[in-house]
Image (tube, rainbow, N blue to C red; front, side, top):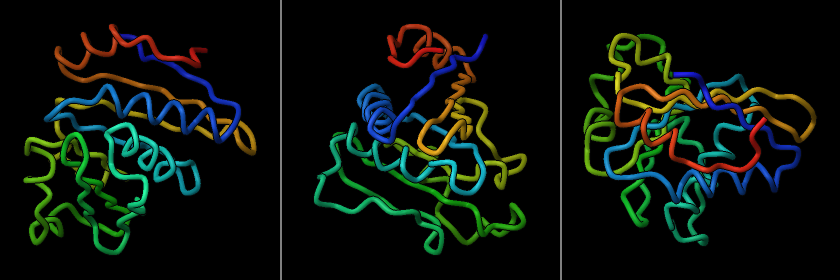
Length: 159
């Protein structure tokens, strides 16, 4: 399946995209967020949390030092940041499998750190910086269920 490419020009349009994606997520979804430092992974995760109806008074922050944050919303949201993981076996002390394979939604920053444990069924979101406030989002679905859903989404900001 060809990836879906979306463009945003402002922080507000990026936030709107994240909120829209969050409203479309379902129980069991795994979304991996790819991109370098400062690409906007946590910004997008925060917006997706709002789309999942996480209370706007609850700060959604990067779990760089805690590895996993949980948020209550329409669905339970697990936000994982694996930046500090150097080897996949370091994950053995963390409840990452419960987060990825539970009934909530998992958002994973730095998913490449999972190595061979990276789930086959997932939605990859590659974020590219195209300007001071503009971004390109490349969405690639993995798995039949995700491919069908991505095809059905009428998302704004198409390239």
